[in-house]
Length: 267
Image (tube, rainbow, N blue to C red; front, side, top):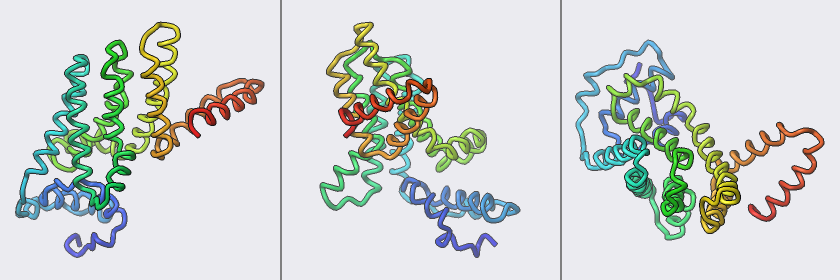
């Protein structure tokens, strides 16, 4: 029986709910519990809407802030063809998301705050946006595709956590996004890495971009490599893909060049 199920002992549920934003309402939490119970414990369970509607609501301010963040995400995605406007929405939603995660994390020391920033994907997005802010010729969908991916993941989580009616209409898309969240975020890292040789080629052969941008971007990638496990996985997968496509007689030379590059740029 649902009423007798001890969610506190369900490790998978606890892992999921720890990642959920604290702005989630008690009503929505009750609904998610019933979905979880139906999908993972008893598929015959019927969701009791009366139980959901009887849950008392608390302050909605965190929800309104979280909603605003996701409106800005959607605006960024829809207005990407208007680069200046999209950038403003990009700054806004990443700043709100960063503040939300800082608020949800109990920080007691300045060192913890610095570590959170260094490892936070939204802070990385702010740095990324700032790097490309001053180079109009570098503004295109390829450059901003990493933040587009991150935006969609965030919007999917928001709809799942807070909007029952929209979630039910888009369930297949949102569920696939949730299931493949880690793969999507690794893909985000891959695109960020691939942008480096694109920037290099654009500068060398088309006089587009700036050497300062390229050097700072390389430092940015190095920082992510040392502080982000997804970035390390992305580097490994790209390396494996390149090596697998090379002729056998070229592989030893490639490996030597790879070691030199790792020593110069990543160590």
